[in-house]
Length: 343
Image (tube, rainbow, N blue to C red; front, side, top):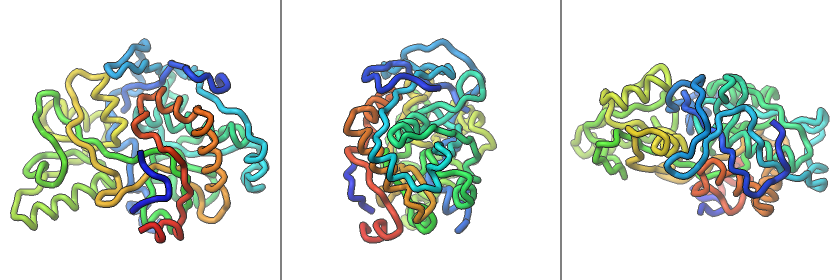
């Protein structure tokens, strides 16, 4: 599918060149799997979330700060946008968002093991600032955000949620980042993953009930139709186990949200990215803030995001996390009606 936009702790107020970046080795209602399938950030993170380390420059030049003191890039309130916030949402003065805190550099816990940080939180902060609201961050499981957003516990979800045909039946979206999955392998591997033929006969780890899994199942069907050996999909109970299996050679590949695979490539000596695929394959999708369908919040978030894009704070946040290549030139509101019209 295509969209109208083309692909390409309290801190200071929009310092254009802040360089303290946070990252840390990390660790499915209409059918739960269908709604939560897109890109569970926690499905393929790696490492020990409680491990503390001094900020150091990774190979991509980004300085990863794991401290709870984030000194986030901030934005100025836009009074005109603040006036557009639906009364039922803005009456308490807060924007209550859900995130899963499961994957670097998307959303994860700082070295105190309790403060949620990451690019998703930083983008949500810009939106809250533009709307003149305090950011109220609620950590939840990937499986729970759809029901809790429907029940009103959460006003928006910022957690690497991609737009898909099942979700638009219940939610509205404000897009803010490109959505890709990355294939990663051991540094010594020679894989170049571009399609189904490239995973034939390999052992691939994947999160259950995710869009990653949907892609692999579709690719296996293609292989079987060609008479080729399908990939063996492997599932692990924890993120750390997933990456341990990969690094030890028990699996050949892991598929995960692209930002997480890039992070590991730049902070570990044993893994590298060997392929990239759109999270909406065979179509395209985008990562978006997720709100209850029809409550009027998504269009306001879209305007707030576009204001942040225009003033540069959005670009600074993505640069801060080493994710500039996933920037969008414009945010767009996606609903069931516009999703269908764009197909």
